[in-house]
Length: 51
Image (cartoon, rainbow, N blue to C red; front, side, top):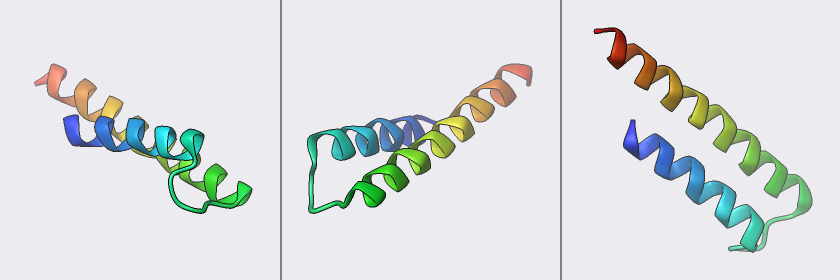
């Protein structure tokens, strides 16, 4: 859960700051992956709260 959120935030930061040599498409893909991983984290949190 926490690792997913950290990964998502780190990915967005990497795309915005320009860490590495990302193309525009690469940065967009990285942000899209971060959104998917953040969604997983939200679902994990919701699932843990239902227990």
